[in-house]
Length: 346
Image (cartoon, rainbow, N blue to C red; front, top):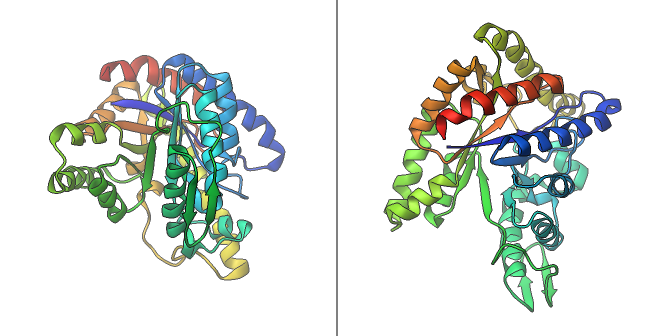
Protein backbone atom coordinates (compact mmCIF):
# COMPACT_ATOMS: atom_id res chain seq x y z
CA UNK A 1 0.00 0.00 0.00
CA UNK A 2 1.22 3.49 -0.89
CA UNK A 3 0.91 6.36 1.58
CA UNK A 4 0.26 10.01 0.77
CA UNK A 5 -0.40 13.32 2.49
CA UNK A 6 -3.53 15.30 1.56
CA UNK A 7 -2.63 18.94 2.20
CA UNK A 8 -6.01 20.40 3.17
CA UNK A 9 -5.18 23.27 5.60
CA UNK A 10 -8.00 25.18 7.26
CA UNK A 11 -7.75 28.94 7.83
CA UNK A 12 -10.57 30.19 10.03
CA UNK A 13 -9.42 33.82 9.92
CA UNK A 14 -8.28 35.61 6.72
CA UNK A 15 -5.49 37.17 8.78
CA UNK A 16 -4.00 33.67 9.14
CA UNK A 17 -3.98 32.80 5.43
CA UNK A 18 -0.37 33.76 4.72
CA UNK A 19 0.99 31.93 7.77
CA UNK A 20 -0.93 28.76 7.02
CA UNK A 21 0.11 28.78 3.37
CA UNK A 22 3.76 29.04 4.50
CA UNK A 23 3.23 26.22 6.99
CA UNK A 24 1.68 24.03 4.31
CA UNK A 25 4.67 24.53 2.03
CA UNK A 26 6.87 23.45 4.93
CA UNK A 27 4.68 20.37 5.45
CA UNK A 28 5.10 19.56 1.75
CA UNK A 29 8.89 19.73 2.00
CA UNK A 30 8.86 17.61 5.17
CA UNK A 31 6.69 14.99 3.44
CA UNK A 32 9.23 14.86 0.62
CA UNK A 33 12.08 14.38 3.10
CA UNK A 34 10.24 11.63 5.00
CA UNK A 35 9.54 9.56 1.90
CA UNK A 36 5.79 10.10 1.50
CA UNK A 37 4.70 8.85 -1.94
CA UNK A 38 2.31 11.63 -3.04
CA UNK A 39 1.11 15.06 -1.96
CA UNK A 40 -2.56 15.63 -2.83
CA UNK A 41 -4.01 19.13 -3.22
CA UNK A 42 -7.63 20.24 -2.92
CA UNK A 43 -9.62 23.05 -4.51
CA UNK A 44 -12.23 24.98 -2.53
CA UNK A 45 -13.09 28.65 -2.69
CA UNK A 46 -14.30 31.58 -0.58
CA UNK A 47 -14.59 29.87 2.82
CA UNK A 48 -11.09 29.19 4.20
CA UNK A 49 -11.46 25.41 4.39
CA UNK A 50 -8.47 25.15 2.01
CA UNK A 51 -6.16 28.07 2.65
CA UNK A 52 -4.18 27.99 -0.62
CA UNK A 53 -7.43 27.75 -2.67
CA UNK A 54 -5.79 27.15 -6.07
CA UNK A 55 -4.10 23.74 -6.41
CA UNK A 56 -2.55 24.62 -9.77
CA UNK A 57 -0.49 27.55 -8.47
CA UNK A 58 0.31 25.69 -5.28
CA UNK A 59 1.45 22.60 -7.20
CA UNK A 60 3.94 24.73 -9.12
CA UNK A 61 5.37 26.07 -5.85
CA UNK A 62 5.67 22.55 -4.45
CA UNK A 63 7.23 21.22 -7.65
CA UNK A 64 9.95 23.86 -7.43
CA UNK A 65 10.71 23.17 -3.76
CA UNK A 66 10.65 19.34 -3.57
CA UNK A 67 12.79 16.64 -5.14
CA UNK A 68 11.08 13.26 -5.39
CA UNK A 69 7.51 13.33 -4.11
CA UNK A 70 4.65 13.10 -6.62
CA UNK A 71 2.09 15.91 -6.72
CA UNK A 72 -1.56 15.18 -7.40
CA UNK A 73 -4.93 16.93 -7.32
CA UNK A 74 -7.76 15.56 -5.21
CA UNK A 75 -9.20 17.23 -7.13
CA UNK A 76 -9.15 20.15 -9.55
CA UNK A 77 -12.75 21.29 -10.04
CA UNK A 78 -12.84 21.19 -13.84
CA UNK A 79 -16.13 23.05 -14.16
CA UNK A 80 -14.20 26.13 -12.93
CA UNK A 81 -11.25 25.83 -15.36
CA UNK A 82 -10.75 26.51 -19.05
CA UNK A 83 -9.46 23.18 -20.41
CA UNK A 84 -6.75 24.64 -22.68
CA UNK A 85 -5.40 26.87 -19.93
CA UNK A 86 -5.46 23.83 -17.64
CA UNK A 87 -3.67 21.66 -20.21
CA UNK A 88 -0.93 24.30 -20.54
CA UNK A 89 -0.56 24.64 -16.78
CA UNK A 90 -0.38 20.87 -16.31
CA UNK A 91 2.25 20.56 -19.01
CA UNK A 92 4.31 23.30 -17.35
CA UNK A 93 4.12 21.72 -13.89
CA UNK A 94 4.90 18.32 -15.40
CA UNK A 95 8.10 19.85 -16.81
CA UNK A 96 9.00 21.71 -13.61
CA UNK A 97 8.57 18.51 -11.59
CA UNK A 98 10.22 16.25 -14.22
CA UNK A 99 7.21 13.99 -14.45
CA UNK A 100 5.96 13.94 -10.86
CA UNK A 101 2.44 15.21 -11.62
CA UNK A 102 -0.85 13.29 -11.24
CA UNK A 103 -3.78 15.13 -12.80
CA UNK A 104 -6.75 14.36 -10.56
CA UNK A 105 -9.99 15.74 -11.97
CA UNK A 106 -13.53 16.09 -10.66
CA UNK A 107 -16.76 17.71 -11.72
CA UNK A 108 -16.64 20.25 -8.92
CA UNK A 109 -17.88 20.29 -5.36
CA UNK A 110 -21.07 18.38 -4.61
CA UNK A 111 -21.64 20.39 -1.43
CA UNK A 112 -20.82 24.09 -1.76
CA UNK A 113 -22.97 25.99 -4.23
CA UNK A 114 -21.05 29.21 -3.59
CA UNK A 115 -18.02 27.82 -5.44
CA UNK A 116 -20.13 27.83 -8.61
CA UNK A 117 -21.82 31.14 -7.82
CA UNK A 118 -18.46 32.87 -7.43
CA UNK A 119 -17.38 31.71 -10.87
CA UNK A 120 -20.75 32.24 -12.54
CA UNK A 121 -21.11 28.54 -13.41
CA UNK A 122 -24.33 26.54 -13.30
CA UNK A 123 -23.65 23.51 -11.05
CA UNK A 124 -26.01 21.45 -13.21
CA UNK A 125 -23.43 21.77 -16.01
CA UNK A 126 -20.53 20.53 -13.89
CA UNK A 127 -20.44 16.90 -15.00
CA UNK A 128 -20.76 17.73 -18.71
CA UNK A 129 -18.03 20.35 -18.39
CA UNK A 130 -15.74 17.80 -16.73
CA UNK A 131 -16.19 15.24 -19.50
CA UNK A 132 -15.71 17.77 -22.29
CA UNK A 133 -12.70 19.34 -20.54
CA UNK A 134 -10.95 16.00 -20.16
CA UNK A 135 -11.49 15.22 -23.85
CA UNK A 136 -10.05 18.60 -24.82
CA UNK A 137 -7.02 18.29 -22.56
CA UNK A 138 -6.10 14.85 -23.88
CA UNK A 139 -6.51 16.02 -27.47
CA UNK A 140 -4.39 19.11 -26.87
CA UNK A 141 -1.62 17.10 -25.22
CA UNK A 142 -1.55 14.44 -27.93
CA UNK A 143 -0.99 16.30 -31.18
CA UNK A 144 -0.93 19.27 -33.53
CA UNK A 145 -3.80 21.13 -35.18
CA UNK A 146 -6.32 20.10 -32.55
CA UNK A 147 -9.91 21.10 -33.31
CA UNK A 148 -12.85 20.73 -30.93
CA UNK A 149 -16.48 21.72 -31.49
CA UNK A 150 -18.41 20.96 -28.33
CA UNK A 151 -21.22 22.21 -26.13
CA UNK A 152 -19.10 24.57 -24.02
CA UNK A 153 -15.95 25.20 -26.08
CA UNK A 154 -15.04 25.64 -29.73
CA UNK A 155 -11.28 25.40 -30.11
CA UNK A 156 -8.65 25.51 -32.87
CA UNK A 157 -5.17 24.91 -31.54
CA UNK A 158 -1.98 24.66 -33.67
CA UNK A 159 0.19 23.12 -30.94
CA UNK A 160 0.10 23.21 -27.16
CA UNK A 161 3.35 24.38 -25.58
CA UNK A 162 5.21 23.39 -23.57
CA UNK A 163 4.86 19.75 -24.53
CA UNK A 164 4.23 17.46 -21.53
CA UNK A 165 7.34 16.01 -19.91
CA UNK A 166 5.49 12.71 -19.42
CA UNK A 167 4.60 10.97 -22.68
CA UNK A 168 2.00 11.12 -24.02
CA UNK A 169 0.72 13.16 -21.05
CA UNK A 170 0.65 13.16 -17.23
CA UNK A 171 -1.43 10.36 -15.67
CA UNK A 172 -5.12 11.16 -15.23
CA UNK A 173 -7.27 10.01 -12.35
CA UNK A 174 -10.90 10.75 -11.64
CA UNK A 175 -12.57 11.36 -8.26
CA UNK A 176 -15.69 9.25 -7.80
CA UNK A 177 -17.97 10.27 -4.93
CA UNK A 178 -20.65 7.74 -5.89
CA UNK A 179 -20.77 4.13 -6.97
CA UNK A 180 -22.03 4.86 -10.50
CA UNK A 181 -19.06 7.06 -11.40
CA UNK A 182 -16.68 4.44 -9.97
CA UNK A 183 -18.31 1.76 -12.13
CA UNK A 184 -17.80 3.94 -15.20
CA UNK A 185 -14.09 4.18 -14.44
CA UNK A 186 -13.98 0.40 -14.12
CA UNK A 187 -15.66 -0.01 -17.51
CA UNK A 188 -13.01 2.24 -19.05
CA UNK A 189 -10.19 0.47 -17.22
CA UNK A 190 -9.10 3.56 -15.35
CA UNK A 191 -8.02 4.15 -11.73
CA UNK A 192 -10.09 6.30 -9.40
CA UNK A 193 -10.12 8.09 -6.05
CA UNK A 194 -12.74 7.23 -3.43
CA UNK A 195 -13.83 9.83 -0.89
CA UNK A 196 -14.25 8.97 2.79
CA UNK A 197 -16.45 5.89 3.16
CA UNK A 198 -16.95 3.19 5.78
CA UNK A 199 -14.66 0.19 5.48
CA UNK A 200 -17.71 -1.87 4.53
CA UNK A 201 -18.61 0.44 1.63
CA UNK A 202 -14.95 0.64 0.63
CA UNK A 203 -14.77 -3.15 0.37
CA UNK A 204 -18.03 -3.37 -1.55
CA UNK A 205 -16.91 -0.77 -4.07
CA UNK A 206 -13.45 -2.24 -4.57
CA UNK A 207 -14.97 -5.70 -5.14
CA UNK A 208 -17.41 -4.18 -7.63
CA UNK A 209 -14.59 -2.24 -9.31
CA UNK A 210 -12.62 -5.44 -9.89
CA UNK A 211 -15.60 -7.46 -11.05
CA UNK A 212 -16.78 -4.75 -13.46
CA UNK A 213 -13.37 -4.73 -15.11
CA UNK A 214 -13.49 -8.52 -15.47
CA UNK A 215 -16.95 -8.26 -17.00
CA UNK A 216 -15.61 -5.78 -19.56
CA UNK A 217 -12.72 -7.93 -20.70
CA UNK A 218 -9.78 -6.68 -18.67
CA UNK A 219 -7.30 -9.34 -17.61
CA UNK A 220 -6.07 -9.78 -14.04
CA UNK A 221 -2.79 -7.97 -14.72
CA UNK A 222 -4.61 -4.87 -15.99
CA UNK A 223 -7.02 -4.99 -13.05
CA UNK A 224 -4.11 -5.21 -10.61
CA UNK A 225 -2.44 -2.19 -12.24
CA UNK A 226 -5.63 -0.13 -11.98
CA UNK A 227 -6.20 -1.12 -8.35
CA UNK A 228 -2.57 -0.23 -7.58
CA UNK A 229 -3.20 3.31 -8.88
CA UNK A 230 -6.53 3.77 -7.06
CA UNK A 231 -6.75 5.59 -3.73
CA UNK A 232 -9.09 5.88 -0.74
CA UNK A 233 -9.22 8.75 1.75
CA UNK A 234 -9.07 8.82 5.57
CA UNK A 235 -8.01 11.39 8.16
CA UNK A 236 -5.08 10.28 10.33
CA UNK A 237 -3.76 11.21 13.73
CA UNK A 238 -0.88 9.34 15.39
CA UNK A 239 0.30 10.05 18.93
CA UNK A 240 2.41 8.26 21.51
CA UNK A 241 -0.69 6.78 23.12
CA UNK A 242 -4.31 6.09 22.27
CA UNK A 243 -5.44 8.49 24.99
CA UNK A 244 -3.36 11.36 23.63
CA UNK A 245 -4.58 10.71 20.09
CA UNK A 246 -8.19 10.76 21.25
CA UNK A 247 -7.66 13.95 23.28
CA UNK A 248 -6.21 15.86 20.33
CA UNK A 249 -7.57 14.15 17.22
CA UNK A 250 -11.28 13.99 17.96
CA UNK A 251 -11.75 17.71 18.77
CA UNK A 252 -9.69 18.67 15.70
CA UNK A 253 -11.92 16.60 13.43
CA UNK A 254 -15.07 17.99 15.07
CA UNK A 255 -13.86 21.56 14.50
CA UNK A 256 -13.03 20.72 10.89
CA UNK A 257 -16.51 19.30 10.26
CA UNK A 258 -18.10 22.35 11.86
CA UNK A 259 -16.17 24.84 9.72
CA UNK A 260 -16.74 22.93 6.50
CA UNK A 261 -20.47 23.27 7.00
CA UNK A 262 -20.54 26.85 8.27
CA UNK A 263 -20.54 28.74 4.96
CA UNK A 264 -23.02 26.24 3.50
CA UNK A 265 -25.43 26.98 6.33
CA UNK A 266 -24.86 30.73 5.98
CA UNK A 267 -25.66 30.71 2.24
CA UNK A 268 -28.74 28.60 2.88
CA UNK A 269 -29.94 31.06 5.53
CA UNK A 270 -29.28 34.06 3.26
CA UNK A 271 -30.40 32.67 -0.10
CA UNK A 272 -32.39 29.52 0.59
CA UNK A 273 -30.22 27.53 -1.84
CA UNK A 274 -28.07 24.47 -1.25
CA UNK A 275 -26.66 21.49 -3.13
CA UNK A 276 -27.50 19.14 -0.27
CA UNK A 277 -30.64 18.55 1.78
CA UNK A 278 -30.01 20.83 4.73
CA UNK A 279 -32.79 19.18 6.72
CA UNK A 280 -31.68 15.59 6.25
CA UNK A 281 -30.78 13.73 9.47
CA UNK A 282 -28.34 11.52 7.55
CA UNK A 283 -24.71 12.03 8.56
CA UNK A 284 -22.07 11.38 5.89
CA UNK A 285 -19.20 9.02 6.65
CA UNK A 286 -16.72 11.90 6.27
CA UNK A 287 -18.31 13.55 9.33
CA UNK A 288 -18.26 10.45 11.56
CA UNK A 289 -14.95 9.86 13.38
CA UNK A 290 -15.45 6.09 13.56
CA UNK A 291 -15.31 6.02 9.76
CA UNK A 292 -13.30 9.07 8.70
CA UNK A 293 -10.57 9.27 11.35
CA UNK A 294 -7.90 6.70 12.10
CA UNK A 295 -6.28 7.69 15.38
CA UNK A 296 -4.22 6.21 18.16
CA UNK A 297 -0.75 4.96 18.98
CA UNK A 298 1.41 3.59 16.15
CA UNK A 299 0.23 0.06 17.00
CA UNK A 300 -3.45 1.04 16.97
CA UNK A 301 -3.12 2.98 13.74
CA UNK A 302 -1.20 0.11 12.13
CA UNK A 303 -4.04 -2.28 12.95
CA UNK A 304 -6.58 0.08 11.39
CA UNK A 305 -4.43 0.55 8.28
CA UNK A 306 -4.06 -3.23 7.98
CA UNK A 307 -7.84 -3.58 7.82
CA UNK A 308 -7.93 -1.25 4.81
CA UNK A 309 -4.92 -2.94 3.25
CA UNK A 310 -6.81 -6.23 3.49
CA UNK A 311 -9.56 -4.75 1.30
CA UNK A 312 -7.04 -4.31 -1.49
CA UNK A 313 -6.46 -0.70 -2.49
CA UNK A 314 -3.48 0.90 -4.13
CA UNK A 315 -2.95 3.77 -1.74
CA UNK A 316 -4.28 5.74 1.18
CA UNK A 317 -4.95 9.48 0.88
CA UNK A 318 -4.30 10.76 4.40
CA UNK A 319 -5.06 14.16 5.89
CA UNK A 320 -2.73 14.72 8.84
CA UNK A 321 -3.55 18.35 9.65
CA UNK A 322 -7.19 18.66 10.62
CA UNK A 323 -9.16 21.79 11.42
CA UNK A 324 -7.33 24.24 13.71
CA UNK A 325 -4.57 21.77 14.59
CA UNK A 326 -1.20 23.54 15.06
CA UNK A 327 1.33 22.64 12.40
CA UNK A 328 3.77 21.28 15.00
CA UNK A 329 1.18 18.76 16.19
CA UNK A 330 0.34 17.65 12.66
CA UNK A 331 3.99 17.27 11.74
CA UNK A 332 4.67 15.15 14.83
CA UNK A 333 1.80 12.88 13.77
CA UNK A 334 3.25 12.68 10.25
CA UNK A 335 6.72 11.82 11.58
CA UNK A 336 5.33 9.10 13.86
CA UNK A 337 3.40 7.63 10.96
CA UNK A 338 6.35 7.54 8.60
CA UNK A 339 8.78 6.31 11.29
CA UNK A 340 6.63 3.70 13.06
CA UNK A 341 3.62 2.83 10.91
CA UNK A 342 4.61 3.02 7.25
CA UNK A 343 7.60 0.61 7.56
CA UNK A 344 5.21 -2.17 8.61
CA UNK A 345 3.65 -2.04 5.15
CA UNK A 346 6.84 -1.82 3.11
